Amino acid sequence: MPIRWRLTLFIAFAMGAILLVLGVALFFFLGEAQLSTVEDPAEKRAGKAAEIIRSGQTLQADDVKDLTLDGVFVIIRNGEGRVLYDPLNLAESRAKDHIVWEKALDRGHSASGRIEFSGGGVPDYIYAVRARTPQGRVRVVEAGQSYKSALEDIREIGVILAAGIGVALVLSIGGAYLLAGMALRPVEAVTATAREMGEGDLGKRLPIANPNDEIGRLTTTINGLLARLDAAFRRLEETLSRQRRFAADASHELRTPLTSISGHARMLDEWALDGDEETVRRSVGTIRREAGRMRGLVESLLTLTRGDEGAPMEVGRYDLGAVGKETTETARAAADGRVSVEFVPNEHEVTAAFDRERVLQVASILLDNAVKYTPDGGNITVSVGEEDGGAALAVSDTGVGISEEQLPLVFERFYRADPSRSEGGAGLGLSIARQIAESHGGQIRAKSTSGKGSTFTLLLPRNGPGSLTSERPTEPSAE
Image (cartoon, rainbow, N blue to C red; front, side, top):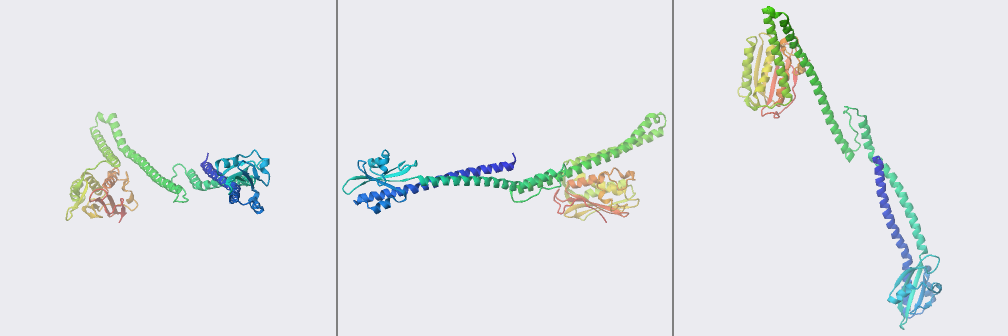
């Protein structure tokens, strides 16, 4: 059963129970009030007659008229029960109905009861009072009145109450149905919107009619959940896309050395081993070179994988200038005089908290790229300093530079600014460098002008990850 009908039936049942209880209580209250309009006059007339008897006066015509107003009858008996006063002759016609006056006579005080005394099939209310004359004679005064008019009024009240309860119940059911519909209208709107949202279509948001009620707060919470799910799905799709591109690029990079190794191995197997020593030596050298290339690629891939998984770091406080100087000397030896590689010392130590081996790897990657892409006779400068509240290591060169269009892509995996250069590597160095920088809570900034050179700056927080005063993602920019 729909919630709307369940709410309607519940409200109708509750309202019906309340109306029934109120109606029954009101019926009994009004019924008692109507009965009291019969009983109170009879009791008052009986008391008035008893006062006349106690005073020793004789009932006059005016007294009789006052006592029998509004359908009240009065009967007076002596101590033996004989009727002394009965203007309507009711006692003789209903002589057997004498239990009320006998009670009053026996008990010595008043008594009351309901007896069909005046006829018509409707009970009468009888009130009897014992009184004594000044001479000591015992008298019993009976006063009564028919319940006929009161019962008719009670029946009318019952009909009116029943009709009122019925109408109120019908109106409450209709009102409950409408109110339930109004209350559930936002839910229906949310359901319709949710139904329109296709699989993976998490960009839509559920409508919020009233953000301050329970349904509004629930819808707001669901929208927040949808936003988080949408962001999570987008990250997942981006990750999957990156993984697919990564796998495709890795396969492509591995295919070239594998093809070369396979070709030279087949050549050695088919004929070169039979006597062509020079060819054998050349093929073996090629195989070793390509195997080394594959080993470097696999090691780079493993480095990236460990970084993606959040490999633990050995963080300590070190002098970044010492790292820059060490990598500069290594790069100078590798350049073998082809280019100038110089380190510009700072006036004082520039210390920071980092993993020395990984930061040394970043500096080596930046210097290796600078040497590769700087023509013979060019200059490479390494310097350290302070920037944005952190420690910075900058590698500047006078190389070929990077175009403005290519600069944002240089940190992507397997991207090479100059693919025609075989010595350019697999295009993973800068990706590894950026990953290491970000794992420290730092970043790498790149500035370059095509044909003039580039500057790559490693920025590290002074006190470990998260302590940079101005943290921004890697921001390549063209000069």
